Length: 282
Ligand code: AMP
Ligand code: MN
Ligand code: MN
Ligand code: MN
Image 1 (cartoon, rainbow, N blue to C red):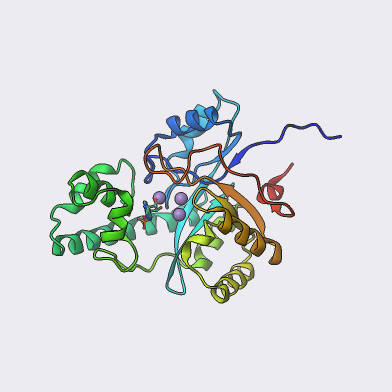
Image 2 (cartoon, rainbow, N blue to C red):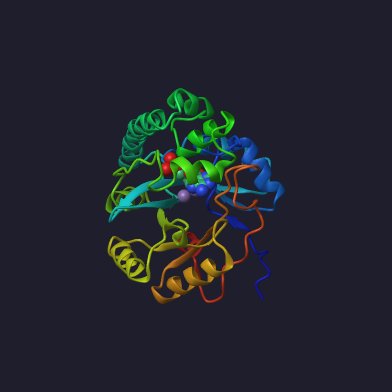
């Protein structure tokens, strides 16, 4: 019998390099305290947090995987594609991410302009104060709106201003699915469709997305996510089985007051699924 202890994986998390609340060092300490053994840092469109996390991980029984969560527009839907276990120094990947970060600055200004029209001045500077990394995210705008008393909570900020088709929502053309997948594959990594139940896709759209994705070489599907309820997990597991996708799991942890769930509490992968880590098994 193989008596190797089962590793606890968390393949989706955020630090202060994007819109998380914990520094990479703090995140690693927290993950280790939750019993996580393999952690992917997957900040939005930036990989700056990883080097610091790798250093801190040496003090714990914890392995860091490279990761990133790429903003993608597919058929007018904003999708998040997580890249895992790739070469950080890959030039086409890093150029692609740098380009998205430039786009983020333009979008942030457009959000601030809409907020101004909606009676909220100073949002650009206000949101920037909450960002300690290279990107400005809607999370930073939400924090600003909350601090200034325009909203009652983070969810309220998305419901009133920042969510899809709300007052300060800006539709944006991010990277294509093809670009995001080619960058990660070119860098030797694997791709995962992040929190697939969160996009509000109908069954037919799911089929089209998965067909497109597989045609481009996509293999991973985030079945277990901190922001999936049991029903969503069950449905996503069905898709993974039916389309022979590799299942991933991640908390999408953003920090103590911003998370769907804490780390280390994820349910195991449902039965009959191929885990994504089989793709890099020794
Ligand atoms: P962005 O990448 O700038 O479009 O911002 C998206 C981020 O906003 C997500 O990664 C979440 O961290 C956060 N977010 C989205 N929807 C919500 C929500 N309803 N409540 C709190 N945070 C949210
Ligand atoms: Mn986020
Ligand atoms: Mn996401
Ligand atoms: Mn995320």
